[in-house]
Length: 320
Ligand code: B12
Ligand code: SF4
Image 1 (cartoon, rainbow, N blue to C red):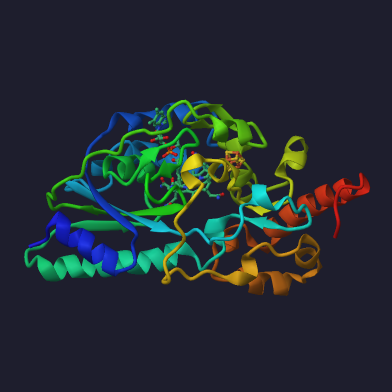
Image 2 (image 1 turned 120 degrees about the vertical axis):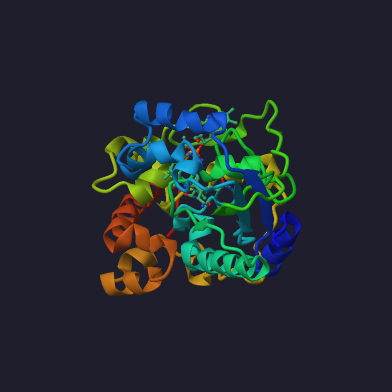
């Protein structure tokens, strides 16, 4: 017999930092995705409009769904934040990407959790396991599973651990006891909205992805629009600023010993990255989230960042 308590206990044994259960339902926040897409905020991420109908209710993904088991995995490295470093010659790589690809790492843990559930429960039941790989609005289910609230920066924030958390879920046909939804604790704070270098927040909880450095350096193909070059600064893959300024990340948890961090991706020098051949760059990013941008995408980003750095140095403010 599978119980909520049993699943949570096993999830912790497998290396997950958080685990909660949401009922499989059509929560009101899920309806907001369609409006967001219609306002053009998804940009070229065509998979979002293509799957919007299914994303509005997890039972359209798996009709027998009754529960969504949501896990959280802390990926924080413990290195200083980019806003603390103030080193324009350093290449900023988003924290989640300074490790083996989380789809593989967390995917294996999810599979192990499903295997364990099947051992506990002799009768057949349906499951679908996703790590950012399925048509599921992961943040909404995380909030309803009690993992944390959706902050003004749109990230799920856990009151004890902060927001350096990757989400993954098992949609399941078993009826498991659900957790209470997490309560919003952002209050009147607007630090994240004010800190965004590209002004990507239209209002609290609403991000225009087409302006976000994460979108521009990871998802977007083609030249990064000139109007955003300066704001991209020294970011070569993703951006963490709206989380770095968050008071809930002032004393953040760091990843547990099972997280496969890669030291070589922790603030390399821009000049050193730029001098690498394509083969050397490919070697560096193999098996990491940076492979999503590919060597060409990464080189495009390095060129923008290095130009920013050299222009800054020309004004006498930076050292190689
Ligand atoms: C597309 C996408 C992006 C896009 C768009 C991000 C965005 N904010 O919409 C881009 C490329 C910009 C991006 C960037 C990043 N991403 Co991303 N991304 C996704 C993805 C695949 C879908 C998100 C989505 O549908 N966005 C559209 C918006 C409208 O939907 P939403 O974010 O789910 O927001 C819901 C709520 O905000 C709610 N809502 C809307 N209005 C309001 C108002 C109120 C009051 C409330 C309470 C709720 C609410 O409704 C929305 C729709 O259901 C998810 C994985 C997944 N399948 O869910 C990962 C995911 C959200 N990303 C993740 C991460 C880690 C990042 C980055 C930190 C990576 C980086 N360092 O560069 C940044 C963070 C930037 C940011 N502030 O969001 C994690 C977030 C974990 C967390 N703790 O929240 C996810 C969950 C992946 C994962 N499996 O862990 N991402
Ligand atoms: S990740 Fe960076 S660019 Fe994107 S919304 Fe947050 S602060 Fe702005």
